[in-house]
Image 1 (cartoon, rainbow, N blue to C red):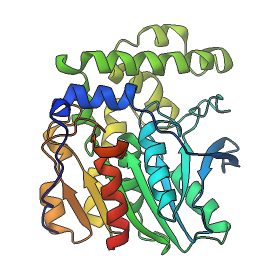
Image 2: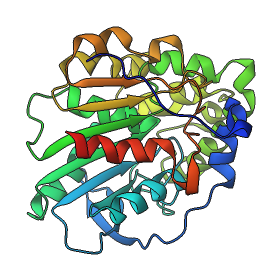
Image 3: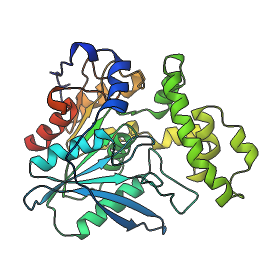
Image 4: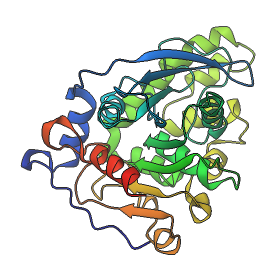
Length: 319
C-alpha cells in the first residue's frame, strides 16, 4: 500500500521526542478501566496472566494488547487502548508477558521480542472460548515486533484475526539496540538494564546451574544482557543471533493480515531500518504511517486519548 500521510499534530509542548516519551511513560494516568485477571497455563507448564476488560454490551470482538520491554497490562499505553475499545463495543485482553504480572514466572526462560509461541497460546486460548468472531492485535514496541512477527512468520493465521496495529516498532532489533546504546539514549538504556537485572537476580538463586554469578556481574549493557541471558535462555547462539531471528523485518513481506505500523520519525529508539518503506509499498496488507512527532509511544493528543489509540480504532473499523 502507499505510505499513509499522517495527520498527527501534537501539542506544542510535546513536539520534542524526549518530552513526549517521558511524559507518556511516567506522567500519564488512565482511569476507569476495570480489569479481571485470568491465568492460563502454557504448553511448557509456565503461565501467563491476562487482564480482561469488557464492553458494556456483550461483544463478539476482542483486541489483544501486548506491552513493551519491562511493561505490563496496567501501563497507560495499554489501559488507554483498552478503555477506548471497550467504549466502542470491543473487549480487551491485555497480556502480561512471563514474569511481568507482579509474580515471577516458573521457568528459567522469560519473554523476548520474538516469543510468538506465547502469543499463539493466547490466541488459541481466546479461540477456545468460542466467543469472538473478530480478533485484533495491538502491540507496543517489543510487543509490536512480536505481533508483526506472529502474522508474518506463518501461513496458518487464524481467520478470526482481522488486523494488527504495531506502535513504535523496532522492526530491526539490532538497529534499535544500537540506537538505545547511543549516547542520546543513555538514560533510557540504564533504566531498562536496571529493571532487567533486578528481575534476573532471583533466577540466580532459583537456577544456579544456568547462570553463574560471574556471568551476571559481567552484564554492563543491554547487549550484554541479551548475550548472557536472553539468547541462552531462549535457544539463540548469542545476542546477534537473537536480534537476527526475532526481528519482524524479515517477515513483513509475508503478512496477509491488514497491519498498520505507526513509527514516529523522531523516535530516538528506532534506526533507519525500522521504517520499512519499500516493504509497505510492495505488500498490499502492510500500512506504514510515519508521523513527524510522537517520540517512542508518545503520541499525546486531546482528552487523554492518544493519537495511536484513535488510529487503531479507526483502522479496525475500516478493514
